[in-house]
Length: 115
Length: 109
Image 1: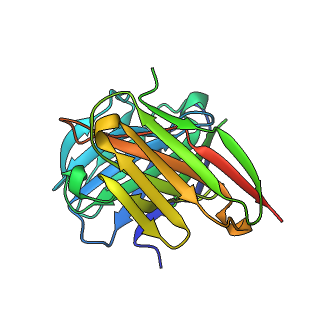
Image 2: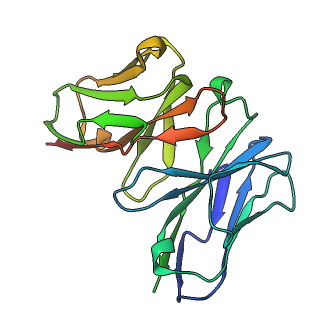
Image 3: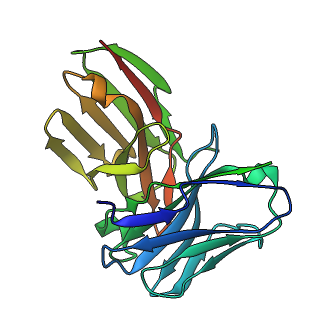
């Protein structure tokens, strides 16, 4: 029974379009994150949110906009999609942001393909 | 440069053999974690291991924070151990987690 739900699991989009990746966590965590995994590249940190506020971002393009309507939601809106945006996007969460004392928990990811 | 170096990049074992995976960090770190990922699958935290040695079943992790290294030992490997093992560190003075590129393990019957 997954505690971090990402929707959809697979997504195909055309260049220039806009998509929203959904993430909800039912672990009661206060911090949520987005990571991106491209072929042959390490998993890359994109954003961290704590109590619905942006804590950190890793110089992600402004085309990537996190949206947090509730503490346990952190969606990712991507505009003007490009083929290079093709990747698997993982949502993660932790109880707090002091990751030296926390485990990270990941969702199953949304695999995005931009044609 | 790559802040988290993992070796080997890939590893093929016969079922029953042992595996030793290494992770080295180029910067000081607060903590590190080992994750397991099936092809196309989610990441599962295997060990959260700030320092020292931890064991869970056939898996043993040893981390020496001061030396910026960690290892994951898999004993008596099984086919179901196949997948990618990722190590990640939390850089000092940040709350960012940086991942290595992983070790792809294949265990053959």
